[in-house]
Image (cartoon, rainbow, N blue to C red; front, side):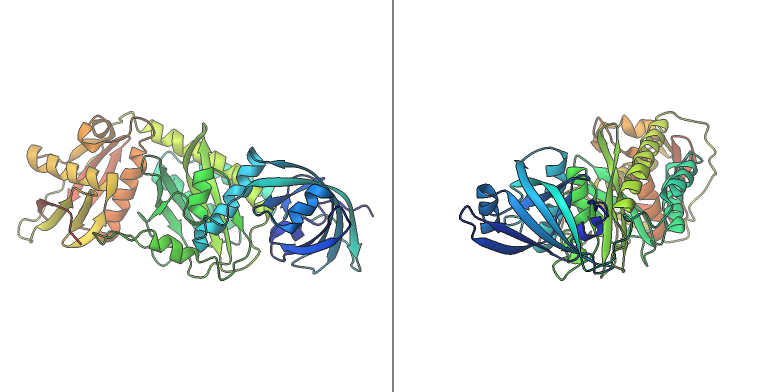
Length: 445
């Protein structure tokens, strides 16, 4: 039976380190471990060039290489005869390898060490099975063609962005074995993402922020490439890394990230539309080896469809529809809500409880001031876009996503102050208590 890389692709997941044997020009051998061999296509693999070590020095002198692989599930063993061809320092393959290495570096704080210098491309000449029974090439465990059709058909039913995000997570987790997932929206101006929808966690974490380059999610956003980790080691302290990145030295304005404390598998899918980054779809599990390359490929397709739908619905909110507002009057016998605003980071506190910051905080503060000055509670997306005081970016302001974030944070933390959508491009403030506003300078120290 002639073996191909598709027969042994499970060995290239990095769960069990591969062994690489090389010789120098004089025939002196050297054997070393490599953390991962990257699958390129049915005939080629790539080795990460990070250090000027003996293995790479030998490859330059003698391009013949032998690799020893172990399947992490079946423990089947294989020996590969390979030939070093060239080193790539740019392009899609290099960027993908660089991104995955950067995600490891972000966990360990070793960004200066884990730097990819190149992708060493090798042709696989022969694959030999060593004392094992070889089955057919691995196939997807899930019927992805059928699942993708159902998932993409589901997206077409929703004309509201908030409902779309929730439905995407419910259907995705309902059709697969994964129970923890979230969608984060990109803020290109601030170079960070904020959680807008999540499922499977004790706390929603809506509003939690992840900087670009931080962990699996941030690196997927930075390089716009999927990042998949099939197993964790002690070095992958993802939750600690993301939480520490949220620490604010002046104000306690960090919303806890809703991730698992001890994830074993993670998959971050960039949501791309028209060449731009819309956000990141993130899934994780407490079990190892949940996400294989079939899973990654399928969710990249789903992610492109989801990103296009998100972008389309946000664009639709530029047009205003008829308002379906309901009247509400604050109960003046109740004590007023004490709303404090800090201009330094546009954070808003209600009754000394942190609510929101950034653009969403600036929007809420502006709405409350307009309400008091003009005695109105009806507003539109269009007037916010034209309001220069908010500092919205000229392109990709994600206004509808920011309003959803604000609406969900209010629903969780401040039931006496709500933001209710009343039609396409329209919404109103709903208050059960009066408000008292005060703007303050950021806390010092």
